Length: 301
Ligand code: CP
Ligand code: NVA
Image (tube, protein in one colour):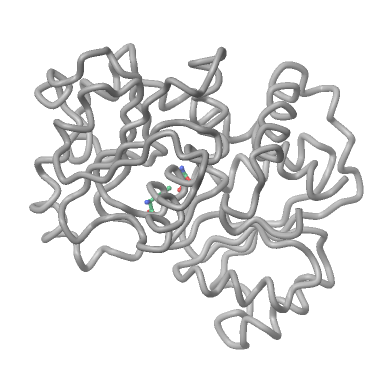
């Protein structure tokens, strides 16, 4: 792989390869304990993070390499240009995971970096999250992806965009319900509609409609990092999109519940639903480290 800014960059074969490798790592992590000896990973973060940062950081240690966490504001990225600073950072490390507000910042990094850039979350995409979620979905439905329906309910945000792409790449049906004006990226929608292996892709404004036949219901925050000034309006608009018992009554099956976390309990999802036996949110969180180790090995070996 050259860089990983979106799952669109990956072939279906490559995604399955990463899922297979992550499965092997999960089963016997000790077998991979020195594969990345002598390698250095920079984690350049402009927004806060628990899971992405720690799973990459700890994952790199566990593979025998050295992670370097760089809070954007403590580097001279706040003084110099991205081009100059990335040219320099990439002289010192083998790989960079970056978390930014604007996706274009990642594209600029790719242009000037001598080493690959991995998107650790931008306003548009969260590819590493969804790759590990595909691993979780595979664990839940080991036989086939063909008949699975994933319903995303909430904001057509970075997580939703990547989920659409990931599902379509693997032939999983994806149904999305958002309020009007909060649909996924137009580019993603057009791309999805043009895919030949698109099993089923549906956009709706009605959460009850997409929950009906869902095998999995996925949600994320209604207010992403960087949207804090829209909070009040969003919380009102998104109220009917909360994952709660009354919405889930419309489901014919008993769907698994996914959330990338951090969750705002009582906002996009109730405490009861996230704590229910069908919730797999911590399985998702665990799989981030296994899948990200697979990404690191793929880039650095
Ligand atoms: N799911 C996820 O990316 O979590 P963090 O923002 O805590 O890294
Ligand atoms: N959509 C959320 C995801 C956090 C992991 C955000 O961008 O803040």
